[in-house]
Image (cartoon, rainbow, N blue to C red; front, side, top):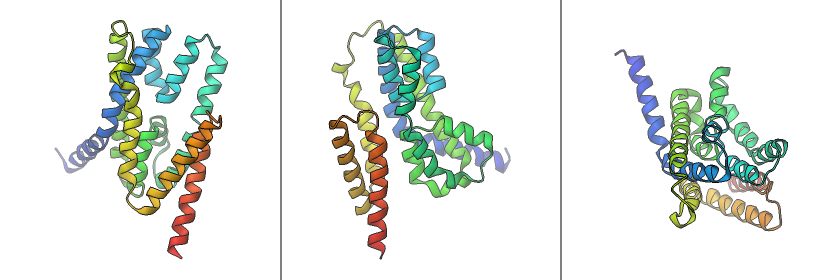
Length: 233
């Protein structure tokens, strides 16, 4: 095996290893999604296709809830679109580091970009331009774990009546907390995380159930940048 192939395999392995925290969260959450989708009346094929084609956890959960309530396709599409508007912010923040990538790689990367993979990519954003295979491997591993969880959930949907006693509904929150802790490397980031979380909570309690994350993200980023610039002066 020549050196270039060894380097490629090493990069892929590193990407898979970095994705392990996401895998630990995605398998149980994907499982919960597969079970709930089955309970909502969605066919097994469509349940699996959503994880393969849509691959957006919160949107998938919202979609199956809307399907179960008899909501029309247009409303489902519009609602999930609004929920995922935050992806525009995530993509915009990473785009300066992906300038050297080919369009097909950018398309594949953006398709599999999620909140969790964004957290890991942003922590090593300065290396994205030089570690394309690692980044793509991380994303692919994350989606593969989500699909695997979905398949297990589909199989088990007829055997489980309620997933809440199993605590699976907390797995996603636990995963986000673990990813957040890994990024709180200094006081500015800790303060930004607390500020953003507080804003998101207040907006949610105020009734901003669709836009609270987007608004809190913008406010938190502005706050963090302001504090960082103020401490440098």
